[in-house]
Image (cartoon, helix red, strand yellow):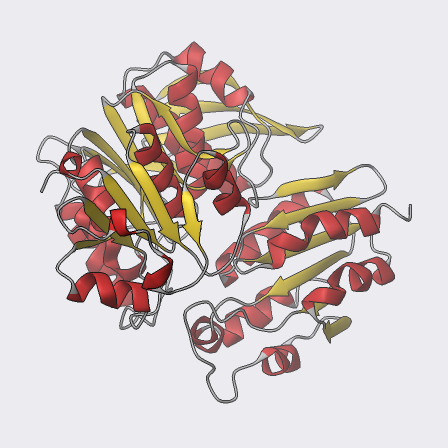
Length: 451
């Protein structure tokens, strides 16, 4: 099918990161964009400022008649929307062409040179770094992000159409719609067990994704994965590896060995060895897209970050507040390791909002182990997202398994005061739900005292 055949694009669940990036793309294509979301957000406000009409009631009566002609309106929905959504059911039953977000993204990405970044962790940061590098090198590329780039304050970087860079999302097997020319896999850990029947099933689907790579294409894979391709990481045996790491004043200095040849003096400001690995993957892909090494060094040094990916709201010698999207035990471990590297010999406070009842149930032991590394744990209620409650699965169950010296359950509305009352130097909020909306309030409260 041809997307250009439609004048109107209707998004169901337009406020999500991936959906709003796609909506921004169609705004740039001069399409008439309209959408529904349950809640107002920064993403919806941004779209409305660009003339996008957004409704907040799941009711077809809210939709203008000009959007109700199947031949003129394409409907795109996110799987996070309940299947019984009134709008979704109306469009399906009324003969409209209705696509999942991944299907629409696949149609766009596969029509140009496609670079797909996959992995259970790290794909948003890696994609954002690569997008910034390509923009810095003035490559003709459109980059769809799953988060908001701090450099561009957007989840879409549009600088031409020769290359399309996308996050290859394993949720709902969305990444199988892509046929990449270059694919990168940052990690494969058990997740989305409401979709997959265990880790082996997840790995099988990653292998299907690999089989979709163009015959003349390339696979770039984390050194810890046994899936073939060109390896990257920190081991000298990897084809691309980082050496001589030095952390000074919050900035990494490092060298990169590529096929045995050393290139020195890269600079990168995002904390954490996992982020260094993400940066290396982006560098390797950018080189394959004919970027010059000196341009990449300059571009990497000016990368600021991604909102809610180790985002500093306060960073002084006496008080630190970091907010991150981490919602999987391995991501929590990566955050903790980054804190130890940057702030050794300190105690850390974490406020965590579990995301999904099923994920909490499936990884209860892993969550408790990861969170128990922190001195103080403030645990919020589980953010349900698309799920209904599961008997016995709640924050109190998780709390009972955590062994931290200080631990308690708290309400979201009280979180700023609860963090303030703990009077800790290093404070972190984690979660993929709505905890990030509290960051500015928490920052304001924390700044009322100085340690």
